[in-house]
Image 1 (cartoon, rainbow, N blue to C red):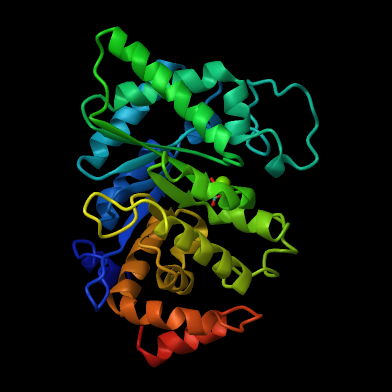
Image 2 (cartoon, rainbow, N blue to C red):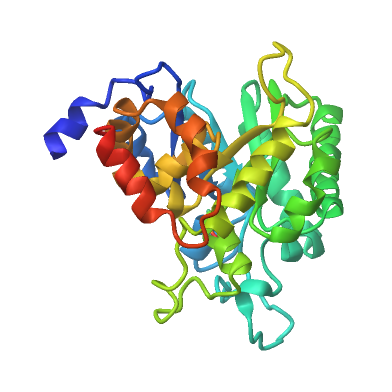
Amino acid sequence: RRAAYAALRDTEPRGTDGTRIDLMINAGLKDDLTALDLTGADGIGLFRTEFQFLVSATMPQRERQQKLYEEVLDAAGDRPVVFRTVDIGGDKALPYMRSGDILEENPAMGWRALRLALERGGLMKAQARALLQAGAGRPLNVMFPLVSEPWEFDEARAIFAQQAGWIKQQGGRLPSQVRYGVMLEVPALAEMLDTMLDRIDFVSVGTNDLTQFLFAADRAHPKLAERYDWLSPAVLRFLGRVVRIIADGPRNAAGDGPRVTLGVCGEMGGRPLEALALIGLGINRLSITPAGVGPLKAMIQSLDIGAIRRDMPALLAGSTRSLRQPLTDWALQRHV
Ligand code: PEP
Ligand code: MG
């Protein structure tokens, strides 16, 4: 099987009906970059920049950050890389950063990610400048984690604008284009998404955090791991609504689709049956763990994407329990 997946490396993730899916990988360390060529992925859909902070004994200075981002962009070549700004704090606490000595009872819902970065302005400014300078002369994609309200995106975006202004003033070179996006991990953001479509370029759903917040169930709790299914109608309906909100938003320049790109970068997308459901809901971009690329590509290449998209509403209608069995039956019947 492993050999069979390797043989798929240079083939495209395209359904039997010709629909193309972007299949990208999640990464966070320099060592992960080899996975890009090994898997033949379309790019890095989630680069977790906090890994550099987590493996370091001291706060990585701007120059060190920039060096890593340059190496990542060099390794990716023409393939896109989506850098996520630091998701630290909470349970990813840094020993060298004081958090105000508050003992957090619910660190996942605590002072982390963008919440922390916006308050520690120096941290965010340094990272913004490192990213913008690393991307000099080439396209750059930046996304912000755990955005809960639109103003948080606006503030983060403003820090990038300010740093870009500074670089320009110094006669430095900027990226050829910067695309900014939000991670959809907090359910409240979905309610406000329509108000942001004029100024974001993409949305990436972080299903790991999103499902723990949708179900109010700790993603790391062993007793809850089996209890709530990614294929529950609640999850799929929620994601279906997000697809429609974006589809109802501004159109792209070619007029053949939404201007705002939608993808999924949580672990859910790396499992073939879950990926089938996501594709069925209308999602065209998945960023997954590298080991999942081969199996997922094989699944996609045997899938009539138009057919699952036509059948998905009926599969969902009236379902009150997980769609795991109905989707398995659907896939078996069609030899997916
Ligand atoms: C997620 O929450 O789904 C996600 C991709 O981010 P992380 O797993 O790093 O929290
Ligand atoms: Mg997350």
